[in-house]
Length: 550
Image (cartoon, rainbow, N blue to C red):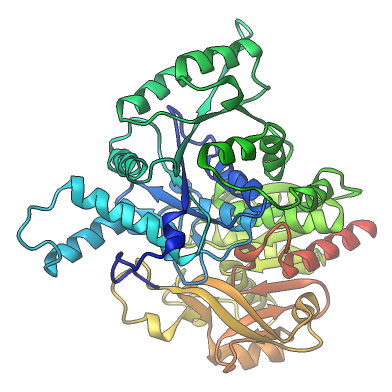
């Protein structure tokens, strides 16, 4: 994983012309600042500008690697192995960029850097303070990212809500940045405008109070974007304009949409790119969102439908599997197919196997990644059901490991087969910890992380899906197929369809008799609307074929 040795860099004339858009929240989290940030980036991209996003999170974790998906949602992994906030996935899916360690700043990262620099003598003779030292390093970080990506505009999403202690120093840094770069920094506030059913009126007081909190921190929003179930009424817009000190045309609707990929067009129709260019003095070229909207139409106007079961143990929080859900949407858009996701909690199947009947409603089954023993036997039962009933199956990371366990138990007769993660004393450790992982003490950032190449076997379903022999996908795991059992598994009919280039690590396995493909990687992390993940397209095609035979 790359870490910045220094945040200093040699500025160029282009750096002096760079613009910055800071996206801040209001009184409520979960409004979709990541989608707003990505959508702003998309409309600027479509008008010929180079953009790069940054996400700031105030928590003191260095990264998201040790976070529970129940608390924080999916842990997204970048090519360089950074385990980061799920909003980085949104940015990549919208903007078709490969981001890195620098695009996700956390409180833990910046404080770690600051303290390490102080210990190495970087601040000799001074007492290190929040202002100006911490805020100064934050400004260096933000400007360095813009320089490294040679961008016209840097988009900075500030995690959390207005008034949070944990993001206050970052907002202060952005205030300072706006003073140092007059005319080149603008602030966008995302707020929530609720409608009370009892009175049938949109209420603007939460937005007014949030704006005053920001104004008290020296920030005057240039644009207020309003999340709501229905479009703003003229009266609500008038109040927000009056009390938040923004012109009415800079109060932007962000209503519920059928798909998140509609949001750029919603903003574009309200002239947001022109508002931004007018404020920042940007020149807009390009043809707009025509190509993007054509892809969105494929999602909104499907001719077919398939039901896909996602069998996991974090299903109570759908954000735990957001990249899988979006990868299915991308594949569905390409195939003109609506994907109906059925969330299946495998801990319930463990307790009552009769609940496997829910799989009868599925045209395909995905077993995603995860850690720990809870729900594991339920996942194995789902895999067994899929293989026995020839239901198309896609296993991802832990899903591949459990597919190997299921096959070892029921096709090879190794009744006690398991992963040493689940049962360290199993007689048949068909899945074991990677050799280089055994001596590690630290859990954070020490797994097999990031993009790794694989070589696919011609004539396999995996090779047919990708259409090439050499592929690269992102990884996040400690365990792998135990090489001591590979020959026995293959003898019993399991197909090893892809390995690391040296042939040592098994990356893909599949069934002979039906579509069952599993990979140690996370192909969902690289799926984009313009470039759907090949394995998801192949899986969804198989699901549609299965449905046609019912």
